[in-house]
Length: 286
Image 1 (cartoon, rainbow, N blue to C red):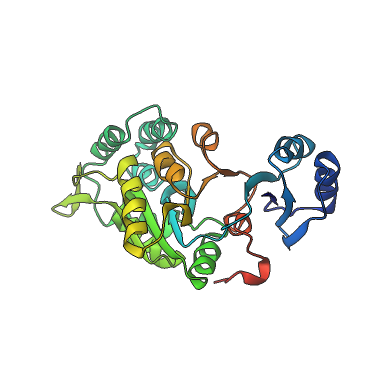
Image 2: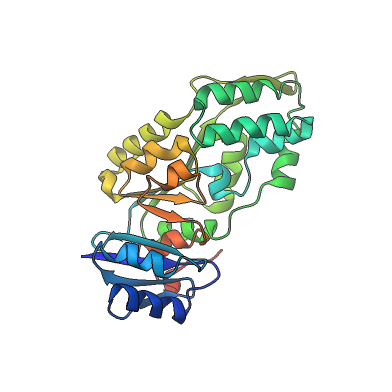
């Protein structure tokens, strides 16, 4: 048996619930919180439910009923745990954001090799005073809604939380602290004479490194990859999402959403908790 989950940052209404029950002939829903409900369902219910709710701002996902709560959270940073792409915001300080952002967008859609795209973008940042990085963090970086609650709730229930980013350690260190992650890993921007050198330290952390991080962490803590949940938005997250027990595409590029186990387009990151069967009373708010 599977579980059909409805999630929405705007709230899951009784009208939505009624439409799904009628369309898919489902039993009564279990209310998880204002933004989430679930139903016992068969796989056939997914299409009927999505068709019934296509005009509503709600995410409809189907997951296995057993072992929903995961023991490892591994999350992308830029445009997932935070609302921006840090490299684009750094570029804005130099007046080259359009050039950098276009490369970022293509890389996240999977149209460019991530490592090459990162090298090209970082080269455009050469000469920027390193002190500007703190300004970017202070003025531009904001946690995505529900991020800290997701991390802290899973940690309070025994999960390890790892932030793994194709971005930069300057930001991942601060974001990990703000959201409550146990660990973080990212790329290192090279600095010479107080300014960005236009280079990133090798090896570059990209798609394969994210997958390797998931594999090494599950082995270290003695679980299987089925007990991991991964969340991300870009093409460089795909291998990590595919390897996890639940791979969640959060406000993701189409190539990612099509291949993930669950899609969250209308939910904040507390939707990740609802997917695992947590109720609002379980949430740890910070």
